[in-house]
Image 1 (cartoon, rainbow, N blue to C red):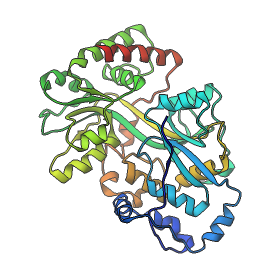
Image 2: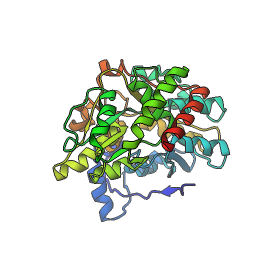
Image 3: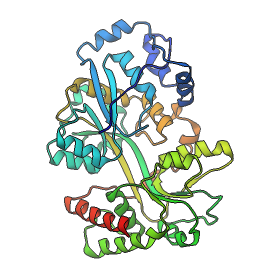
Length: 384
């Protein structure tokens, strides 16, 4: 079990109360890290007492379950200073781990982050609660298409946090070709036997990618589709060095040459490598691939539901959503963030994905049968 991380306040900001959140939104990730290196300091905002009075109805704490480095640390501390609840973060490494913890009843998360399939699973198990939209006025900033997600139309149980893409990224210093489809990359693997290849850790995502590579429906449970996907993955296994390696950490050190992974991870890796004259290319493939939507979700076991709603509502404000996007490198699906997002993200079609591309990609909403088949295929892939 992951030990909860209690993140202290790190940044000192003096600002008029009516501009505190706007100015906080302009604090970059680099500025945060620099400040953290100097030492801890309190966030001082004139009028904080009145802010506390406004937040009097909130609980005194908030436990967030999230993936590591999947939210800006400055937002945890700023939230506490603005609204009162002390934020504690407990991380998990996979959606399966998060679901298992909620099923076991040992983790009283107030909020968890999960994809559309997790929303479906947790709802079917009766482990999440309906959201109170009267406490979420900033839902008005959510992109219109995010109100119509196939797994939760109307945002009854979830609010989209980040939108990402699954494909391959690679170092052009190693891979000389420029693959255009997912199948192109699979066909290149035997040529680059000495390349360091990493596949992500996840049964569902791995089967999803194989089905997309073959041009099939990524939610298919047809025996032929599953058999063909399994055959593709097992044929690729001899050229895969690691499964579930820390893509950001290894990639940032130039220790991954080809990676089946996410666009946001590739963006972070690129920022690190470019300091040393290196880079990776994440490609949006012709044909289809998977895009995902991660969501803020409130479990039934939440002990601080009002604080949870306040956090989700705050995350929907444009300045905060832009700060999140700048930090994690994934698209925040909130309107009005353009002027606050860094140019390298706003102008990157692999992050700020054009609507015409997103329309031809697929999103996952797996059935229980699909998840069972995915585990079987994944076990065979790892054992090959």
